[in-house]
Amino acid sequence: MKVLTNIFLVVSLAIGIIFMSIYQQEYFYGLEYDVRVINGFKNNSSLPLVIWCSSNNDDLGGRALQEGDDFSWSLKTNFWGTTHFLCTMKWDAMRRKFDAFKVPRDLQRCSLFRKCSWSVREDGFYFSNDEVNWKKDFSWL
Image 1 (cartoon, rainbow, N blue to C red):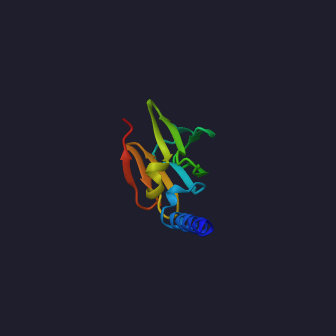
Image 2: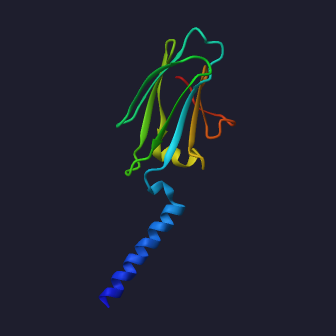
């Protein structure tokens, strides 16, 4: 009887893991996402948009993006579900930190294709998961 109980528990656990991996992917680590930050300013060719991004484990360094340039990277979510990339943006006298990728917020909104794109413009920061439809997420101030 004890052997049957152990077999039942192992089979139940296996079915549970399979179900969660199919329907609850956010509970599994190692999902790959592409993040892209685009300089969406118009007529600012003389003044670049400066970006510096990092996570707890990776420092991606800084870049100076001219109009239309982008900064892209790929990441994999960690086991704990705490993957977080923070970027600091600077343009002229304006400076703003923002979460370029944060697991609780971005697992679902970065869509089936796991693409998180940002267009930084004069009036704020726009998000898209398809680079066709952009929605303003927040302003510089």
